[in-house]
Amino acid sequence: MLLAGCSLALDWREVRPADTGAQLLLPCKPASHARELTLAGQKVRMVLHACRAADTTWAVAWAELGDPGRTAPALAELKSSAAANVGASRLQPLAGRTPGETPNPESGRYAVSGRLPDGQPVQGRLVLAARGPAVMQATALGPRPDETALDTFFDSLRLR
Image 1 (cartoon, helix red, strand yellow):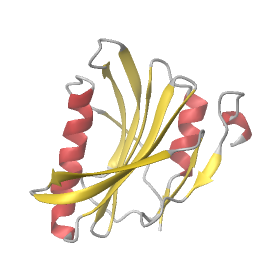
Image 2 (cartoon, one colour):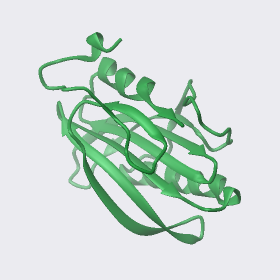
Image 3 (tube, one colour):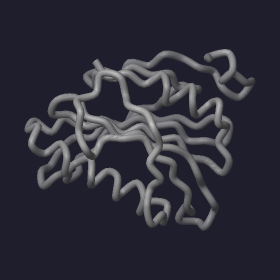
Image 4 (spheres, helix red, strand yellow):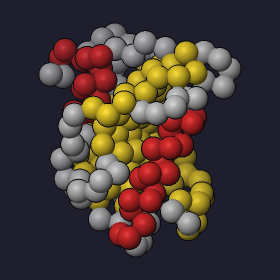
């Protein structure tokens, strides 16, 4: 599977972002950013690990909520925000689950297409998952992301 997702523009590496419980393959070296935001009615610190390769942005974000009761509302907000960010009216559900995730009705895999704020068309995939009182969003967006690379990225995602 990994060899099929390889190209000169993609330099796959295993990433285990600190304090996230996530493990995944990224096709480029990620930069980390953190910011405070309101999610499910409370201020949380969301940490983002992202990079750009093959004209696609690859990212994983993680936030500790502290209260498992806030998980479903937080995932619903992340889903709504992801659609709004590209002007999509909705996300198309896809089959699949993230190994290690805590079952939640708001978790899932989605296809997304829309436009960036500058009007450029964009498409990709999104995964929303929870592990206990934490939420995770993995995203890959670009004008025409490679399907094999998308599969490599999302199929590699594990929560522990």
